Amino acid sequence: MGTIIVQPIIEESVWKTVGAALIFIIVLLLIEYLKMKFDFLENVISGKAVVLVENGALNLKNLKKHRMTVDQLEMRLRTQGISKMFDVKNVTLESNGQIGYELTDEAKPLTVGEFKNLLQLHTSAKSASADDNLFKEISEGHPESHDKQLQ
Image 1 (cartoon, helix red, strand yellow):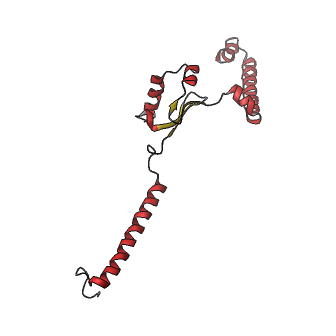
Image 2 (cartoon, rainbow, N blue to C red; image 1 turned 180 degrees about the vertical axis):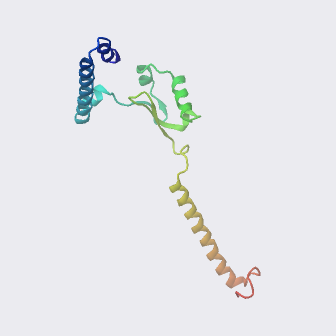
Image 3 (cartoon, helix red, strand yellow; image 1 turned 90 degrees about the horizontal axis):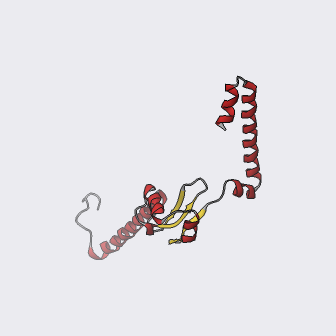
C-alpha cells in the first residue's frame, strides 16, 4: 500500500496519490461495513477464535492446525502471568494472534465483591457469637470487663 501511495509522489503527481489513498480508504470502510452487517463475512475476513485448551485438556488437533507447540502455548501463558498449566480452564487463540484464557475457580483472584461477601459473613458470625454471650451473661453473671458505670 505504501509503495502505491509513494510512487505517484516520485512522478510528481499529487492527484494520483490522493486518488490511490481515497480508493484504499473507501475499500477499507466498505469491508468494515460489510463485516459489521454480515457475520459470515466477518468469519471469512477476520477469522474467529480457536479453542486450544478446553476444560483443562489440551486440544492437540487445534494446536497442530495452527502450528503451535505446547511449549509455545506455555510461553504465552507465562507472559500473561500464569505459572501453572492446570490453573487454566479454557484457552483460546484469538483472530488477532493473542490468547484469551479463563482460570479455574481455585486459581481466580478474589474480587472486591467476593471480599465484601466474606466480610459480611464474618461480621454476621461474629454478631451471632456476641448474642451467645448475652445468654451466658444471664446464667453466669456479668463479666468483670465492663465499666461499673455501664452496669
